[in-house]
Length: 88
Image (cartoon, rainbow, N blue to C red):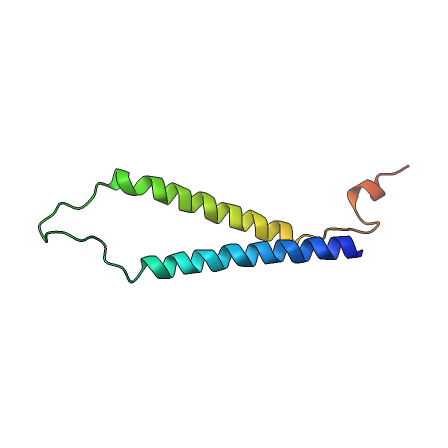
């Protein structure tokens, strides 16, 4: 591996760590807080209200999984890559 590939991998790992740290921080802010402030007899929010944040969280988790896949991949394959194997 060259220095450029290693440097890029370090940046990708740093970005992944920063994203996961921000996610943990946001979860810690949300978990201990009250679910609502108001009368005890208030109606619970409809499931439709929770669908948009749920979709956003699912997309975020899918993006994190894709980023982990990219970080774990070999950035500079040797002669075993598919291009090298199909040369004439």
